[in-house]
Amino acid sequence: MPGVVSMILAGGEGTRLFPLTKSRSKPAVPFAGQYRLIDFVLNNFVNSDFLKIYILTQFKSQSLNLHLRQAWHMSGITDRFIDPIPAQMRMGKRWYEGTADAIYQNMRFVQLNEPEHVCVFGSDHIYKMDVRQMVNLHVKEQAKCTVAAIKVPIEEASAFGVIEIDENWRMVGFVEKPEHPTPVPGEPEYALVSMGNYVFEANTLYEELEADASKTTSSHDFGKDIIPKLCEQGDVFVYDFSRNNIANDTGNQMYWRDVGTIDAYWTANMELLIKEPELDMYNTRWPMRTYHPPLPAAQIRASRDGRESVVKSSSISSGCEIFGATIDHSVLGYGVKVRVNSEIKESVLMGGNKIGKGVVLHKCVLDKNVEVADDIQIGVDPEKDKARGFTISAGGITVVPQSTKVTE
Image (cartoon, rainbow, N blue to C red; front, side, top):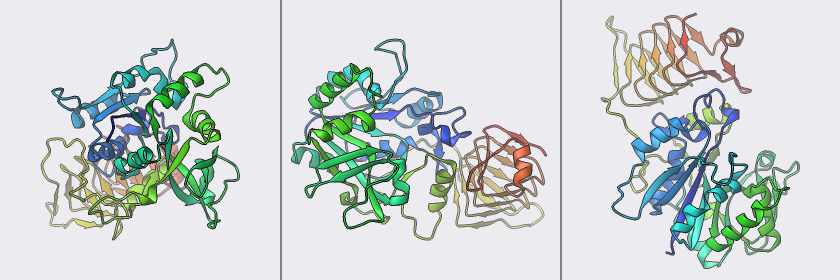
């Protein structure tokens, strides 16, 4: 395998996930009880044995940086590294002006490693991928650029970059977020879309970024500028994500979720709780690393008056204490405390939450350290939740911001 450097774009604001992104960037948003969104792409690279990784951060990066220090620190005794790079305005007093500009401003870090190929991946999708298989195809085809692609229902494709291919999987058309997506030949109900994951021949990347930086009319974005130009030159191959195979995996290896909205985020959490989840989090040959705080095992027991706890199809993280409560199809992060007679249903609690007696939570997302007083109901009366200042998504999910104390 030739020399590869990986660049992870982790500067997204995630405005559609507000208020979960009020004090953190999108890649730092907690998911599935104990992970952060960025953990998925990092596990993909580490499990693929690509261990020269730069993470480009920008907005509200403190929470993300803390997580990276705790979960993804590597020893400096080898040439392997996972290094977060903050926006340093290396090309002038300006923030990153697009995904391509983010790489351009940090191109020197890439060049120091003298790679033959460069992976440029996003940081906020939920999926598992053996990146080595994509790079192998890229090398075999002697491609200047390879784009990972997946089929999505045609009605959802307008949210993505839509790809057209020839019979050899060479890209012949690419349109970013088209109003009328082109369907897959022979499959009119689907479109082929970019996953936002690219492998570049290193010199091609340098040349294209230099050329793009000099264009005042460019938006300096891979999807809008770099990929369409290379596509016109016939230099882009497409990697079919359905070909990716992870040994010993029992889930749907085509599983890929963009959790850019509250409804998508909530749904992805709920998908982990079905009888046969499509995302296999328990494959020992593909360990899912993250930071684990020093907490005891979850404790689920009866209350002092003898009321038993009931837990149905839920995920309960370390440090949780559940006393005589009902937890039904819900995800509880680290250190959640739930008191007697409370009922939590179809909800996500991110961690450090304190839930009083007789509380009802229905289709809620509670950010970290939210406290709910006795006998409060959330997710039951939308008008009351709006009056409390909570966000209610288009799908009816009630979101309570971080560290809120709900007393009435």
